[in-house]
Image (cartoon, rainbow, N blue to C red):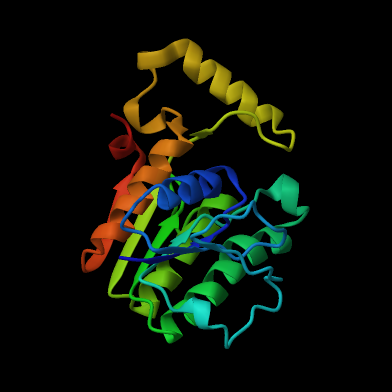
Length: 212
């Protein structure tokens, strides 16, 4: 192995995926399409793309595995439709192009509580995205469902998330395992491990399984 395609490489989880993938000697090439250029690396291919107009004929869609950490929040997106466009439409558009190019493995960073029947928009969209990916029929599909992500300071302001992290750290082991914040490095490790193994079928890694 391997050619690894990372979607969302500039985000908190995506940065960890990029760092860990490039550190793997088995990974010959990391493909990371982004809107802005990433720091150069000898084994990194960094196409500059617009997710509204993804290139359908790019040869780099063919990889051994896709690691998807694309995502935003309602606050960042500005509306429900804009949020859905990123977390659902962009993800599915890229997944279809990768599958059409012959990529057999897809790993998604989803969310704890993802459910297409949820009354919560965020969790419902995450669940709908999971179901749509399952319907595409990848040989191997892994859905990683972390709780609150703990990855250090974010470039954008998220006061509610910051407060929740502070409370969780203060309460420590009193917080049920499935609700504890998950280090972004651990999420990336689980995603990369799933991509490297490429086990056939659909696999779900819940947040409680992301802790040591």
